[in-house]
Length: 106
Image 1 (cartoon, rainbow, N blue to C red):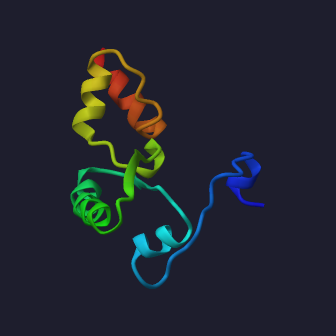
Image 2: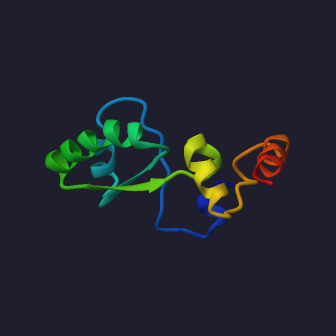
């Protein structure tokens, strides 16, 4: 059973496309949108032009969803800034690093 089936999303189909244009596969299935995830700005830089061409070719819109943090990239600068402002960074660094950061802050 797929995650879509488990979620009870009967109007959602997950399909792998290994040849041809994505918009052709989407159009043949009556899709009105393509959903893509992104991890960082490099993914957006790569995917946005494709989304624009796909829309021009088919009228199908692309919806971008950011990846869960464990699948993305968080810079050390951002982690330090969040930590310095009192935020919880335990989900972004190993426990040993967190302890070192806490000791340095004292």
